[in-house]
Length: 562
Image (cartoon, rainbow, N blue to C red; front, side, top):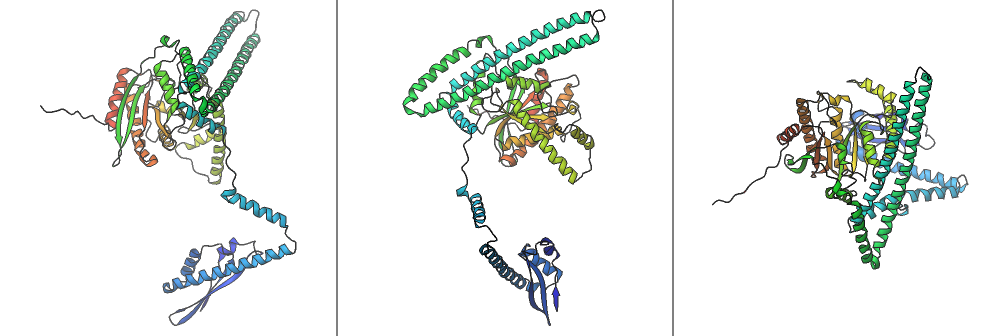
């Protein structure tokens, strides 16, 4: 009995490669009861299929007895190994013949071999060139943990004061221009219909707009120039100071100079400190343990403050302000970063609302380590456009039926490809904010102001993804807006606030329990931020709710028996 299996898959794979493949027949003889059987299989060499898959197909399709399974596998393996070696030898002989007859350029062939060897072996790989940003980060991290830290902080504060004074001058000049233009427009409106027409009013308004644009562009250019000069001077000074400290002969003298400079800068920085009194903010702290078997301790804080207060530097800094600046600088290049969730709309820019206010705060102090906010947002826009294009191309290849209002969202994305969807977020890095290193710009819509959102709302799922990024990127302290809003409004009644806080508390608790599988159970700090305009009574109601949802560690008082 003879049987033949045409391997359609193998033949299809090697179609069009007849000049480099050869067909050979595998013959296997075996005995089934009183019958002598012969299995014949044509194979294309070199064989592209896995031997286990080919063996299984032969056993299944030809109903070969199981007691000869191992024998068939051994025979097939030996045949494929032997014929593959013969096939490679044949190809090698043909290659040598082409080389001897001059059909192949020897120099081109040796260059290709050398290039392949160099690209695939580690010993010939080019060493990575040191990056200026990485070198500066290492130098700064070393200096900020040295006696020079006080000098660095005072120098940064003086730069901040000079920028603040420049911004004050800009605001004053713009305000005077607006007042002058308002008075001029009032005169024009009084003469409307008598000596002036609507076209004259429009011409005056256009002139006013152009004048404002010219003034704002002038100040923006001047501020950018000053910040660029400050950043260059600061980085050069840090590098030169580190180089001087590396010289052992001058270390004592340089340390004395650092102390003198620090005292002088401190006098300048503290000259107006008495004029500034920081407003106390409501705050409650809790220690909790989460986990079923292996419990992890976390710190929770409930804070009533404006979200931008965590970002602003005080021009006349107090002792607490200086300590916050020091703490932020010490942990800038560490595994204990601080993050903040900022609720924004779906446009990646800094032109309106809380985004404009945050951009104003970020411009008040020069960032000596990372690109400015505008440059980071430009990069985010480019990445968003690329990601959206990739996503749309995949959707065209595999069309899906939109569900739960997805049709409206997809149309909105098609109209505005640079916009992001609710629940998505982008990240900006900062070294010039008071208590924050990383800002998560979470996109939310007007739905967060309603009272019927659930745990599956995009804003809640966005918080989960943010916490996951915190776990994977060493952000150990994160500030979350508890009510998912930054400002209170009329519809946000006491029942609305309690219901929203309970939802966010429970969801964040579940996300924090997931953290154990994300990061192995690292202790973290989560700050729940409520708007500054909320009442003290409401604040303490939320404070009483938190221990009921989280497992708060209780204190044990030991007394001696008399």
